Length: 339
Image (cartoon, rainbow, N blue to C red):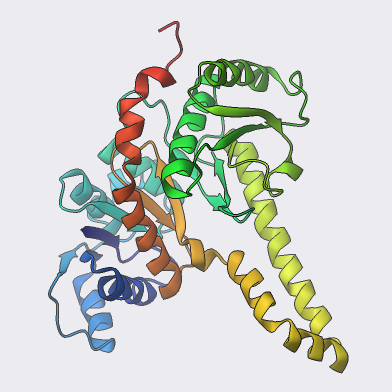
């Protein structure tokens, strides 16, 4: 399997990106297509003592998309950027998946325009897996589509269900619609319309829709896929990240407060480490762009080598999962019956 890497994307590129890719080459056995400024990539390879370039190819791309660039036009205006070249390579079949820690908006727009969506999918969605329960919970969408229609959300539910089954190990994924209450009549027009579509799909045995869920249900293990519009999803995601950071910082302050608490921390060190690991973004790696015709993983912008390695590991699992093929096979189920 060959993974295309946007070596210049992210806050710590190319050093941490290339280091993470090299680890993936060693531990996962993947071939690498490193895209970016060749001299910068080779410098990192040299620093890491990587003289054997078997299974590693470098494609020179002189430009870089920055956070200041307009996401909607970045890959078109900067055609020689590492991200734009990487997307073209994926479209042309030069690799099996693409991983980038660059601009989220530019990657999503570029993937949509260059690699294209799966035929019949109205909008691609960003679908992170959050720490909850045994397998985690998928949030779809988390920011790609601020304004949505009921049809978009219906398709998100199907795509999320396929992902949860094949990537998260959920035999019969429980799909919930994020709302301001669990009663069937809660929410606005979008929620009412989406609820009706999801209920119908459930009654036909196509998805396991459990009804409306509130924000408090997202992390209690009662749902596997949470469906919402990108605006609401992004607020939930960023709020969750903030709470986790605050909680970990506060917990650290408690255990460093005095000698007795420090001793207690030593006793609980193993369990605290496991809890921290379960909430660590480095363990997840990135977010899948679900609905794109080929696997694209958005790694965290602040990715270090460990986080980027995890993103490549996720890309490998995505390629092997058959999710894209399953979505393609069920497109007719995901369309409104009036069509």
